[in-house]
Image (cartoon, rainbow, N blue to C red; front, side, top):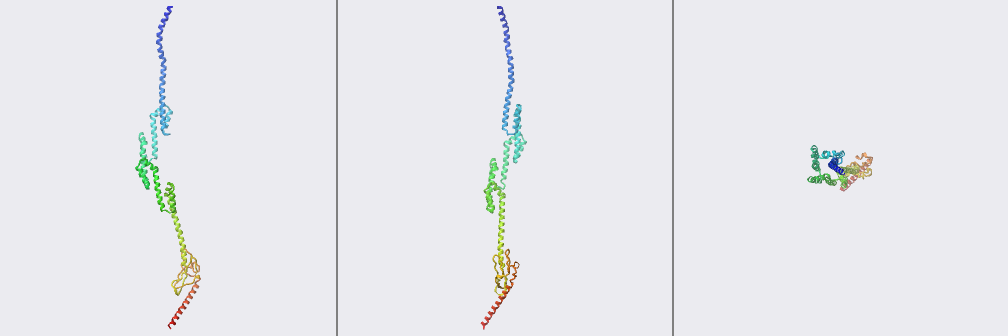
Length: 364
């Protein structure tokens, strides 16, 4: 019994060190795979974190870029292609894309810019990316103000007082003053000058010019410009036409009056030759160009009878109503006139004989 216990004790003594020495090795072997899995999982998580950071950075660049820009398009493509494409875009691609966008912007400015903008913009396109950035940030504004100065100076050519004053003030002011003048101020000043010009035209114009000018003053700036460019000339032409028509109508009335006068003076009977009486022949008087026959008035005595004339533009007056013989006095009533002349001669001879007889008796 004692021997068996002793044997068990000896066996336990021998086995115990082996068990104690073998346990740490097994524990180390069991822990080794866990450490390897942790080491394998660590780098993968870090890459994912970096990829997420790159994605957020690219999204910020795309949001700040203009829609349709190269930066926006290539940034979106990099996100779709994965972590390596995103890292490459952030390190290099974004700068190339941004410079391409700057070139496009400068080209657009050149297309619509003045001489100064075109000159400096082309120089920037031939330069470095930094030159293009400097042009977009400051250079374009300096060049544009240079062009604006030229535009303001051009408005002074042939300008009125208001435009001249406003343009001079803009040239002496800030770049913003010149922009404001070109966009609005010059038009306000020009309309004020146009109002003065229209008022001056009205003062010297006829009825049509006055009416058209007043309508323009009561209208829009465009109405005033239209009046000065075309309206005043059309209105003045109408006034001149009316004046010519009025002058023509006045001349026609004068011709009628002259005809009446001529008719009166043309109604002249031819006086016979007599030994006494008035020196002037008797001149008949017509009324409003009516024909007066020699048969309707008594013949007159005189040394020389007047010859009737025909008034211009009036009714011809003749001795017997025939128009072709008014200037000679020859007509069918010539016998009556000769008979009257003979009676006058006879009466005159009788009176002369009586006077002589009285003188003879008085002497006796």
